[in-house]
Structure formats: C-alpha cells, structure tokens
Amino acid sequence: RFRGFNSPPASPGASGLNIVPLDSDEGRLTHIQFGEHGERMLRGMRRAIACFASSGNNVIIDDLLFRREYLLDYVDTLEGLETWFIGVRCSRDVVQEREAKRPGRFPGTAISHFHQVHAHGVPYDLEVDTSASSPRFCAEAIIARLDSPPEVFPCLRRDVVADRPH
Image (cartoon, rainbow, N blue to C red; front, side, top):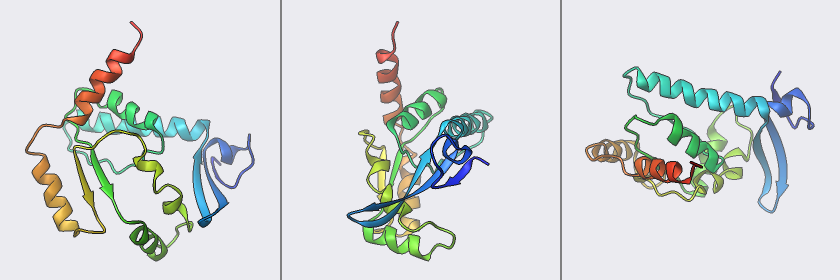
C-alpha cells in the first residue's frame, strides 16, 4: 500500500516509498522518495537497530544516508554505543556495472544517489573503495580500524548537543 511507482502526491504510494523515474542529462534515472510513512519507517528502523545493538549484539549497518538528518538521527539513536562511521565508495562505472547485473533493480537508482549519499559533509572513521580493493581487503581494513576508538560519532554527538537549545 505504501510503496509506489511514480505515485502522484497525496497517494498512499507517495506517502511511503516512492520509486520515481527521472530524465536527466545522464539519461533515465530512478529516484527513491520517502513520504510521511516512509520517513516514520526509517526512524523506526534506526531505533530497532539501536535496540538490537543495546542488547549486546554486534551490528553492521548498511544504509544510504540520503539526507544529513538521517546521519544525525543515527548519532542520537546510537548514543552510548561505540559506533564507527565507515564510508564505502565505488567508482561510478563499477556502480553502473554492478547495478546492471543485479536482478530486480530499477535502472539508474545507484547513479541517481551516487553523490547524494556522501554529501552529508562529515568525514569517516575509515573509507574503503570496493572498486579498487577486494572485499577481503576492505573487510580487513575495517576490522583493523576497530582496534582504535571511533572518532566521528563522538565528535558529532558533542556538536549536536552544543547546537540544541538549552
């Protein structure tokens, strides 16, 4: 009910997760838009992840940060939990190639969000490039980084707290 394909505004599909084809200079792209129900689902997902981690489980979150607010919500939601912020990058050509090979994908989705997901303006504790390095190398780099405390989320928490009205 709340998943739409090019659903018009005010429809159930547009209020959830809406897949919207766009024509651009880069060709036909597919954009993902979240309405009121979609945003509530995403907030709930982040809280469920925090609950799972707070119960003593190790968690790897693989999420697209479409907006800076999503990152800041993770900062709030994961407060008190040791959290490393890892950026996973990939060249544009490889992103397109991988997307074309995956069944059930809407063509142009990855390119539509290629720059957006890293546009939050926050550095990472570590960045890996899956188009330049093997999965094993990337995983080993991440595991090695876990030997040092996280830096980004603690700094963001201080900034978020300082920016709140007293």
